[in-house]
Amino acid sequence: MVYFNGFSLHNEEELFKEFVVESDLCVAGFSYGSQQAFEYVYSSRERIDRLILLSPAFFQTQKTSFIRTQLRYFEAGKEAYVKQFLANVAYPSNLDLSNYLKVGTKEELEALLTYTWDKQKIQEVLDRGTTIEVFLGKDDKIIDAQAAFDFFASLTTTYFIKSVGHLLRG
Image 1 (tube, rainbow, N blue to C red):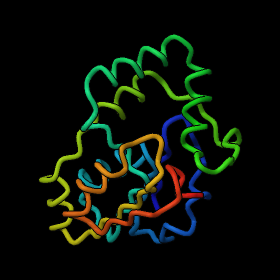
Image 2 (tube, helix red, strand yellow):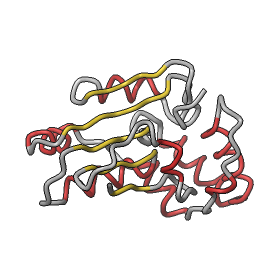
Image 3 (cartoon, helix red, strand yellow):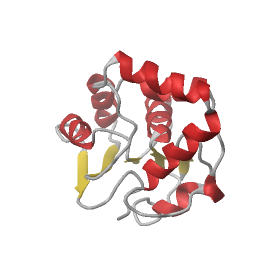
Image 4 (cartoon, one colour):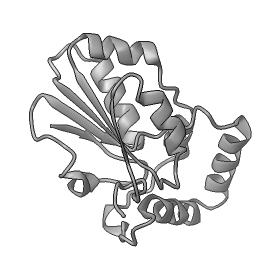
């Protein structure tokens, strides 16, 4: 399996063992890593049977001011921003993510906040025979999970899990 990490994280794939398929023909990603996983699959000409998007970072319904504010807070205090960000990622669990911490860059944050999921590109991946599964937590404090569900559900197999947040844990 090829796995892509979330923003400011590394080696967190062990947290998602129950959602992923251990196969050479599977690609998975968490949050920011979902965007990277999708682009990897989209650009690949290799056989990929399954793409698993775990809490895909979905900000295309946010106003430009939201994105500017996030970037400004990050620049003003990267460590404080990442600490609060990871607390929101873990919510509603109290899982300590410090073992997975790898502080991201402003460029990575900007890329994840400005990424646009494209229905046509998703359909092209599906037309190649790749199954796309999306897992979303209803209580996610990072993204608008309902907007993400509304977007992905018409195209992919989408699971909207009650009482869990961005980490898909309660």
